[in-house]
Length: 181
Image: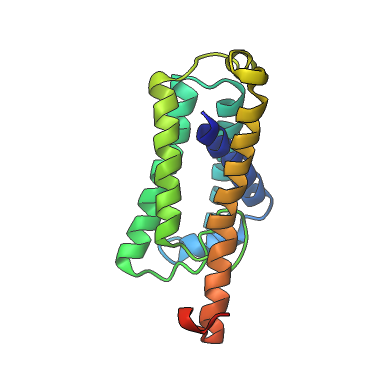
């Protein structure tokens, strides 16, 4: 359940960021989708709002439908990034958190798949009803679980947004793995 909470938190954060600044995501999509950025921008904004709403719904009322939507979201993200990576496409930024220079990586696919699996598990076996009801049955009324979910969200954010930026910066500077230190 902790990883599921992280998945929902990330959907809310990423959806809100892209809704406010859809440009980076629209430019990233324009490299792989045959539509102009002017068309993709509004589509990204609408899709981002939907993404954030799914995250909020998944947080407030985990259950088969909401957790299933969270799982489908992450499965779709993993599929899209996988297609881009296989094609060797020019996706310079996945735009997940409306940040430039965050290239899609295999780690991105792996994180998306883990989050999709966690959400699918909650959809199949998890609680159904308000989150506070599910947390009431947890030790210390779910505080450790919520903290774990928050920590997982931060770590996933670092893996998806910050780590690729570091790799891209190293590549621009011509630094290889053995040269660091």
